Amino acid sequence: MILGGAVAPNVVIFNSVVNGFARAGHLDGALGTLRMMRKAGCDPDEVTYNTLIDVFHKLERFDSARELLEQMWDSGIRPGVMAETYNNVIASFCEVCNVRKAKGILELMIDSGCKPDVVTYNTLISGLCKVRRADDALQLMREMEPAPNTITYNTVINGLWRSRKDTEAQALLDEMISVGCPFSVSTYNCVIANLCRSREMEKAVDVFLYMRKKKCETDEVTFATLVDGFLRDKRLEDAGGTLDWMARAGIPSDVKSYTKLLNALCDRGSAQKACEIFNLMVDRGYAPTLVSYNVLLKGLCKALRVEHALVLFREMQEREIQPDVVSYTTVIKGLCAARRIDEAIDLFRDTSFLEPNDITHETLRIGLEKSGRLEDYSSVTGRKDQNA
Image 1 (tube, rainbow, N blue to C red):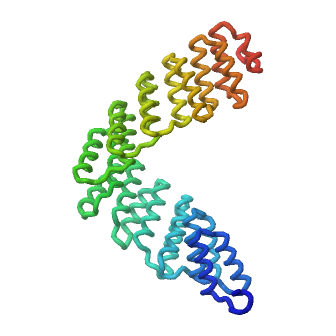
Image 2: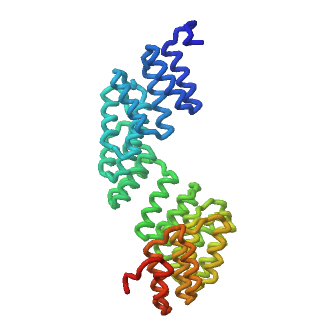
Image 3: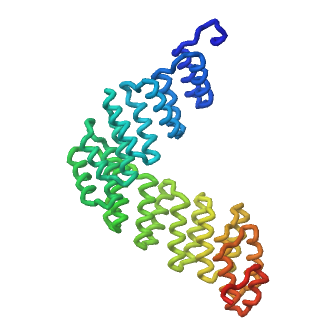
């Protein structure tokens, strides 16, 4: 055994053990070795800290990564000339929206003689855009010594558009073209998203067709953005057509996009079409969620198709999707509207384990009142009618 006295442990041996645990994702083992190292009187060095900071970052334990860097500095050790350790800590601060400290790390990095690379700048620029400081992100982009790459441009352009700085974003997009910085699918997606936000759907479609012409691979984000744009513009048929195109092309969508379409159809009063889309979604292999069911239940009850709503209500339970208070309240409202008060009361009693909320109580109260049975309210709910 190394610690048994046959071989005196040194920092190289300990670092090998720490690295082995880190590669295996065994964080407890790596930290245990660090404690053992200190107990043996062997001071951790730059390699020890860099290895542990890297594994903390990969495991998204950002606070721990920062604490370890502070310990490293307190010990008089600096990460040296390798940018990766600094980049990991900058990313850790940006993940928790603390760009002030992230910028402080960049300054320390430069002061220690370590040259920031494009990853350093892209990470901090992304953090600035995340907290809606697009102007600062653009300024940092202008100051960076390595040339901005596609990721840099994409991040700042998207940040400017999100901050409603359309003129600046367009200027940067034009600059990207003039300097010959290649567009990626993310660039195109960013442009399409902004056009959709501005309700310039024809231009968004033109960009999409241009992507296809240039043989730039579209992805799920491209299509999901178009679906959202069509829905925002009340072009439900085009939204459905986009989902059909995705299915034919073998491009995966998600339940969220289908559910948004269901909601728009139900709001328009097209419950039958919503049912067809719901069935199509299931046929294409997308499992409905609680939200999907609640949206369709609401649409069916709004259309006074309460019998169909009850079938759907039972179906969701057969699929082991437990109805929530929204599901129950929706169907109770539908039953009351159909003058099926006794069934509404029975369903209300079934909600006891969910603790029906004020909306559920008020829904039943209104239904009873309209049916001339308001006197039943207190006995059914255990509450006194506050409106009496």
